[in-house]
Length: 79
Image 1: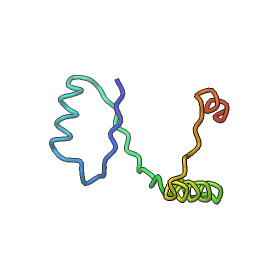
Image 2: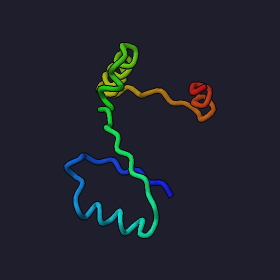
Image 3: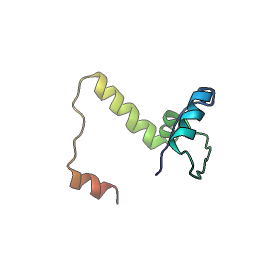
Image 4: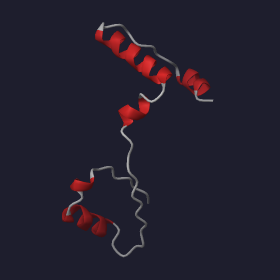
């Protein structure tokens, strides 16, 4: 079983830890801590992403319909 919990460090409470202990009782587990990069900052890192996101935001504000893709088109884009 694999689970991912995303929370701020100050949200780690004794109840959270007890929940982990109860969920995985008697089993060996591995805990990895990774600082999460701010998603907005990540998406705005490159000029191309920033331009595309700001254009999409402006189009949304104007009520313009966004682009739509079929699953096959999305799969082609991800290659």
